Amino acid sequence: MDVQRYLLVLDMDLLTVDEQLDLEPINYLVARQEQEPCEVVVLSLVSTRQARLPALELLLGAGVGKFPVAPRPDHDISAAAEHRVNLAVQHLTTIGCRASGLISDEDLVKAVHSETRGHEYDEVILATGREGGSWLARALRLDPIHQLRRRLGQRLIIFPLGPGTPHPTPPAWS
Image (tube, rainbow, N blue to C red; front, side):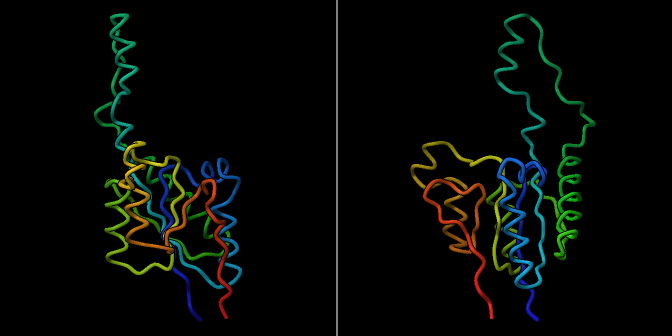
């Protein structure tokens, strides 16, 4: 019996993603699991943006002469990514998938390329909370989504589904 392998890329908690996307990523994986056993590797991206102070916060602080406090130097920014991967693995195991996880502090494109270069996946599922890339990068098709699409083609499944994006349907395997 074949096992379908999926790479699920997250930059936020799976349940939060599901809440924002009306359970689409989980329903998609449930439908896949009902057709054929699946194995899901959860790739949790560490957000290094959490370690930086927002520019607006710095400007507002400068205006009143009080600067915001930066995150503690001993604050482990990968703790959220680790928690996220553990919850996702637990949730995916509950729906019947074999699941494991890994954490990467690389950007989206580098992390996905590193993982797909070393392992074979039937599909790469992006369930991230942000589109990534500036409007200019998207217009020139240099944003992370287009970079990944060039490499992965139809194996790349993106949630949320944008306008005009066909809803992915599980293939009818015999």
